[in-house]
Length: 262
Image (cartoon, helix red, strand yellow):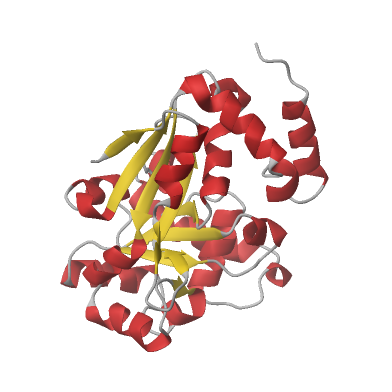
């Protein structure tokens, strides 16, 4: 997989913002999703990291979440709404968090103080190109809606639940869906959030991308420039105070902001 090592704050900008290209209507748009990680981790989901017979437990996790969760916490009842809500609150799922914003990805690659002495990474995936590998029934919805990503409502029109999605993978081949979560709270809005959803619980995105390297690249943020990136993001008002609205985010930001560099 193509890997680029950022040499400076300026170089990091050029790498990430060069994904935006001029359209035929004169605007600059990017087809890339970004995922920042404080260490050079792969793209394993929280469901995979659960371990054990995680694939068999996926349905039980979601079923019990729906059973015990406050139903006022979600405006609709589709499986995809529930899955997005569960992911947002930390339930192990096959979803992965992404963002449209290079700055938000930089934040997540540099927010953990304990990892500022280690290299970080930003994964970059071209979701417009990955859509070409979708089954026709999914691809047709994107074409009809003139969209490059799904909403939960759009996905519900063709795939009702995880079992149906698993069946599509068996009839087709593995694929990835990029899904915009509903605006459940200001955190999702401020983080310019996006999810990836694999067609099967055991299909790992990083393995899938290895044989489709034209769809992605990753950017290493070396430990030598992480402090500069972190401090300049704070200056640009990209911090926990903005990305986790509320007192918890404020306290996380203040704790990190006043911590010594040791």
